[in-house]
Length: 283
Image (cartoon, one colour):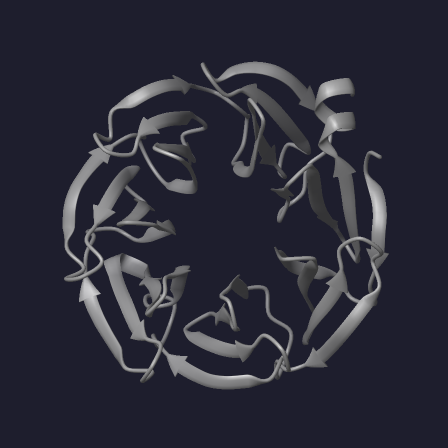
């Protein structure tokens, strides 16, 4: 199974995530639940007041946290109803860039280095200044691992929201992160990727000129790393140990991700899926 159409919706799919056996898609003003095996639409709710291209979300155990420019929504996972809303900024200089969460808190990076921490139990918001440049992406683990405009990888303490250490891994815009065990994979607008030791921030391996234009990580499968460059219309499969190129695939859109043995993709109104055994191992 390669590039098989799973479901076609009425509106273009903006974002796609998966939790358990359910896909969650934003299409137009709707948030939609889809059975990941059959493509059957399980539930849909028109919860947004208007169309927007700034929405991006993360899925917690009982809620979806969705950014929309300067606004953050808390959406009930069962009912798809908005339970809470926070205004974390006011304009283009203070919009939300990245989201993350742990058991007790939701984290949102604000353009130009701000960082909002929301206590789940009370909804209380505290804002910190943690970076001299905007944080594009973050991973929440024992610490907060974040990439910023300057190309730095930051390690942020979750208790006092202070940068414990940072390393200039790239020349600019560290925009995509992937954490696997004790290794962090980073992708930059300088068109390079790096494999970094989580504990020391030392670069284990790197590869320059990965694509001709901007790209991101779709995930890792077995000993392969998958990058996608929508401006180039291509994916590339990399050997994980040394980041050497395994093969290119002439296809690529925003929002692709790996879950188990399946690659999910967005193409206009359609959600596609490919079995990675066919796409990588035998394709």
